Image (tube, rainbow, N blue to C red; front, side, top):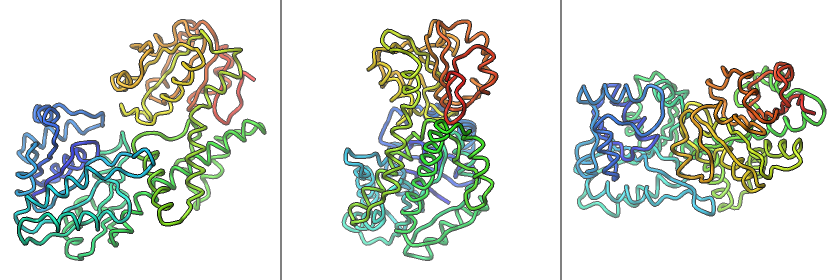
Length: 434
C-alpha cells in the first residue's frame, strides 16, 4: 500500500519505518527540514533498539522516503497517518493545534479517496473534529474516511511493540475503511479490535491511566511496607500470582515518567471534568506519583543532617532504561530538589546526558558512574540501566566520600550492600541504614 506518515517523532518514525519494512511504500513527512535532511542521511534522532537498521533497509530498498512536502506525501498516498505531537497544555488538556493544522493541510491536498488515520494520542471526539476540519477545507468533492488507530508503544521496545502488538485498535464509522486498515496490519498477526472512534480514543487513555494507577498503588504499598517491616517485592510477587491482578507494573520504585503516562492521565482527567465526571482514582494516582518522585530526597534528608554543600551522585537521568527520554523523569525533580536544599549534583546516564543538558544547568555531567560517585557524600540510583547492575560496588564505595546509597529501583541486594559497608536505602524493603 502507499502510505504517508505525517510527523517523524517517536510514534510517527517508528510506525513509518516498520510499515515500510512490511513491504509498503511509506513517505514520512515533517515540517522540520533539518530533521528530514538528517533522516535522509540515515541519522536517527531517537534511541530505539533495531530502528536504525530497519530504516537503512527501507531506504536502500526504495520503500521508505522522507520529505518536508506535505502536499506530495498526501497526494501520492492511499492511507495518511496523523502522528504529530499532542503535548499537555498548562491546564492539562491535550494541545490539538498540530492535529488541526495537519488536518487542514491534508484537506487541501487530497486528490482521491483516502483513509486518514489518527495515530496521535487524542481525546474522545477528535475523530469527529478532524472529519469536520477536512470537510470544511476540501478544494473539491473527494471522498475520505477518518479512523482512530491509537498506538501502544513502550519506549525501548517500540519496534517489537509495533511488529508484534498485543492488539490493534481501529475506531471507524465506515466498516470498509476499517477492513482496509485491518488488511494493512494483517502481517502482524495480532488481534483486531474494531469499534467506534470514541471508544478507540478512550481505550488509549484508559489503558495508560490504568497502568499509571497500578504503578502508584504499588508505590504507596511500598511506603507502607517500610513502616510495618514488610518487603514490597514479596508482596508484589504474592499479588501478581492472582490471575485477576497479574505481575505487570507491580515493580516499586520512583513512579512513572516519560511522554505518555503523565500527559495522558491529566488529559483524561480534564476530559472527564469537562463532562462532569470525576475520575478520583486517576487523580489520586497522579498525586501519589508526584510524591513518589521525591522519596530519595526524603531518605537523604532522613539520614543526613543537611544537604547543604553536600555532593550527591545521580546514576540515571532517563525516565526508564534503553531510552534517552527525560520528559517527566523522576531525576529532574530529584536534582532540582537537591539543588534547592543547597546540595551539589554529579550525574551520569549512558544515553540521556545530551537531553538533560538542555534542561538542567549547574550540574557536573560525568562520563561514568564511577566519576559521578567520586567524592560524593551520597549516591542515588534513579534509572535501572543494565550497565548499573554490573557495577563494581567495592570500587564505587572506595571512590565515595560518604557511604549513603539510595537505590530508587531496588536494583541491589540489601544484605550485600550492608556487607560492603554502604548505608543502604531502598523502596519498600528493609533499609540497612535504619
